[in-house]
Structure formats: C-alpha cells, structure tokens
Length: 251
Image 1 (cartoon, rainbow, N blue to C red):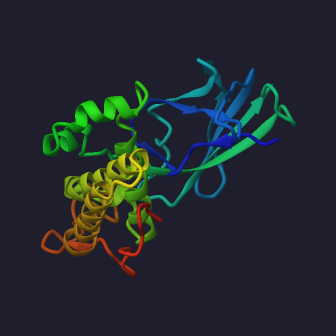
Image 2: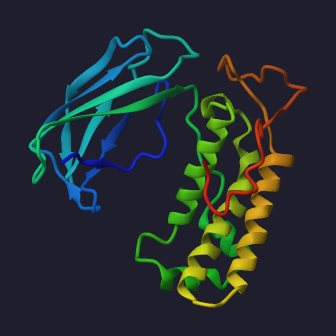
C-alpha cells in the first residue's frame, strides 16, 4: 500500500537560505507513518544531482538539512527542480521501502502569506470563540492555510510563478475573503437548515473572486533580479475563464 503526501503545492526553497526540509507521510486514513531510515536527493532542472544525504527522523517525520550553499553553482531564473525521498522501513506499508518525489521551485525570495486569522476575526470578533469551539486545538487557522494553497494553485494555473511576484501584499485581500468563505462553509455544515451561513459564504466567495479577477494586479520579476520587469505596468492575475462557478474551492 502506497503512502500519501499532503502536498497541495510544490516546495518553494529560497536561494542562500539554509532550512530543514520535512516530508510527513500518511496512510490513506490520515495516520502518520514513520520511516526508519532513508536518503534525500535534490535534482536540478536537467536531472543532475545538486545535494544528497541521509535523512533524519524527528517525531516520526523524515527531514533533511538543506545547506545555504545548495545554489552556489547556479543562477536564477530556473525552471522546476525535483526532490527524491527514498524512505525505508515504513511501518505497516507494503512495500516498506518507497521512493517519493516532489516538485521544487527555487526562488529569489520564497512566497509568504500576508493574511492571518486575526484579519478574519477583525471583521467578525465572535469568530475567535466560534472557531475555537468548532476546531480542534492547533487546527483553528487551517482555513488560512487551505485558502492560501488554493489561491497559489490558481495563480500558478494562470501562469504566475510565485517566486517571480514582487508585490505579494496585493494578494492579501483575495486571500482573506477566500478564507472567510471557507469558514462560512464550515459553520454551515454544522448548522442544518440555517441558510445565513450559506448566504454569507456566497457573498465572501464572490468578493474573493472579484478581488482576484477584477482588481488583483501583479508586479512581475520574470528574471528574478529583484527589480520589476516593467515598473509602470502590472499584470492581471486572471488569465483565463472566470472561476465564479466554483462553489468553494480553488483549482
């Protein structure tokens, strides 16, 4: 039985930054599966090995310490890289040794969110207590993460590579209302027959799509030199058909 990755986006790694990469793996039922050993390999766009070594295991999760020098022999921009995790001794899995691959995008500066749970609670103070009641401890801000994953996935589907966007702050409004629509969906599922959450969720989803499709303009840096390609011109985020027909999720 193959294990499952929770990886809705490629991995974004930043040039010149050392970091500990992790790869939690699960059963289809969501139980964490711990390896006993394994190796990590980072491959460039041509499939040539950039970095490799033995993994560590912390709290049942495989990890690898990527050095800050991994990009010393390269220049930006790059097309997609790839990482390979060869994990051994996966308990209860057949085979117990499995190879897992994931896309890697090397960025001048990796993208970061500009929206937090506090931004949602600022508009609905009562949501702070309601979310604490509705969600398990440590999972209250999951809607922020899910909305971010769906929003970044849509941006990439529309041809915008995250590492080549300079004005990430401009995505914050669409991100906020996207997350608020997900909160309303969650509350709607808990209260049978109450249409108020459905109506509020519809309005927030519409606002999120309007922000993305009509107002979101991106300052692009396609050569990743830290300077906008055209400082006087912004690129429309929406490059294709409207997503207004999507009820809740992203692409």
